[in-house]
Length: 295
Image (cartoon, rainbow, N blue to C red):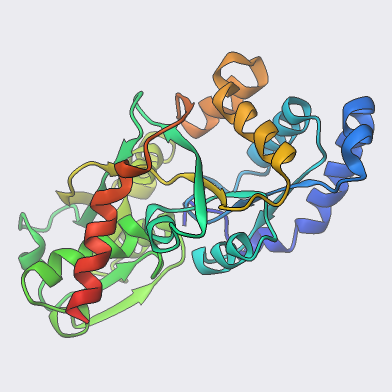
């Protein structure tokens, strides 16, 4: 989500854990009743929209009350770290990206998909300086290009697949590439001139343009991809704890019906979470297969 949670938040994990304990005490009954089974561990990757501690606190508070379990929000700097925790059964669920979801689809199950503008879809944007000419990816030849994360669909895979379709590779098409490990960081890299172009999550870009217009003011969208499956909530194929997972699923699906849940959704600029067909990620899987075949 960059716009996502970053390593600066890792230093505050102790504070969040303390806050979780306080919240658990405050809600007494339900949390105490289930504490013996351990907390619900929910992972957040940099696809998550913001590093706002208020949002984290409200999300944690809502999930604690809605599920009846103590809740631990687990953040890491990269998609790979959260995906590894998820597939090894160290997390009950995580908000990941479509690319790691399809890459590990045999090991994961789909829990919920966010709804943005009432649809479970988003786009990848190629962005450039606001005054730059051009209209497509071939106009970026020779650029210094900023990617978000090597396991990001919108921040890497879409662009890599677009080049593969043209029998091109990033290391030869671009003069240089680098990873920012956050979509907001991609926008800042392009806006500051550190990069000539960048690959970024369209949802993140649009929300940053709304909330922090100065960040996007120096950039423009060169090209938008087709609509793709929105970064989902996934869980291990064999649940760490079936009851915890069912409680989390219900809490996410019903978030839009709850005052506190709606407050979290407003902060995220989302309409809610829904149950979607895993086939909605087939287009991302096709891009991943194309890149694999290209070597």
